[in-house]
Image 1 (cartoon, rainbow, N blue to C red):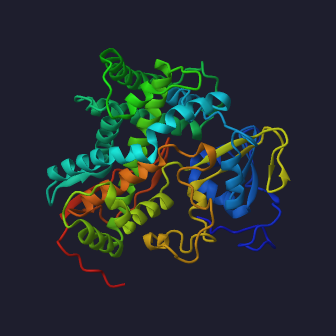
Image 2 (tube, helix red, strand yellow):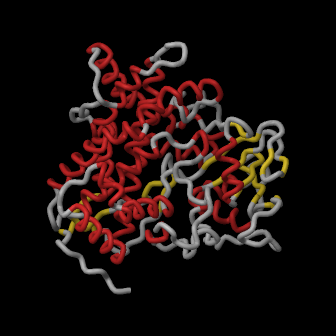
Length: 466
């Protein structure tokens, strides 16, 4: 991995007029696509090593890669004004439809206004009990000495939470079917990002696209079943689906069935895939860092004393939240952000030609030693209040930023902290010493199975000496 070198002659800590520098060698017609496809994360770090604003090509597309937080901030906050929201590929569009993540312009503003009330802090507070109850139910099935597949356990848990908070009911034995369909969707989107199918017309059939269509049919059938039953019953519940069905725009119009489907799938993925992935990585990191695990245990014992946490405990669990934030730094579920320059676009005062695709990467920025000393180390204490040096704004952006920041960010943080607190006060999840490489897809997933042995957490965990 690169070490975050900057343009020669520029102070690493002081912003200045951006200078566009060339990226790695390109191939005729393909540009940097082969290198990107082989190792997207490593390729982004190579780009960061070239400079702060780097020109490269993804196939025929001219692209810029930005690494400085102030330029990342311009990209994140400029979508819908300076930059267009990009087309993220046929696979991405098929899965998420025309939801708030993929739409733009007036349609995006309408949908955001309709969806946002469902995930405001007051509403998230009402979901906290479900999050903790589901985690507590899982803990009751675990036994010391048991061998588990960590990702499978975490995704099953966050799926139960997502279904109960979204639909207000369990999926009646369909969890495995939906989970398998989501795995297919995950891989298909990742394969498309890394390969030539990104540039193929939507009508071109490929084996991967056929698999994805079948998976989306499964997802659509389940969402349609639950939505249809709710509409027919007229029942109002304290869940996200009821709020989507009850939402009305400025003209008094509700979301259509297709719009409800798209928003439900978007919220489902945000509350299931991303949080389940984050928790998997958190257990992996804690297993390899006994000091952090001991400090976490001390906080949980002091605050909870063995009881199940609730929403009001969140402010009393700062280190638990820091563990989650540091996990999101090292293994951000969303690992890239893009925008397409509109006419008259600029970046740091530098004109950007219309149509240029501007990229940034959470993976690369979160590992920049200029903002995060010893960037490869898992150090939750770097998020202590008053910790120095503090990272600049937009150096850490796991949920994006600006008007298009993830609507479910608060939901995801509350869920991850409560689940981690509930389980970690009872068990150590020992994943062993093997390295788990990341795999790029819709989210940043473990590239190999993460298996672990459960160990009972003692009533008091001695702090490990440095």
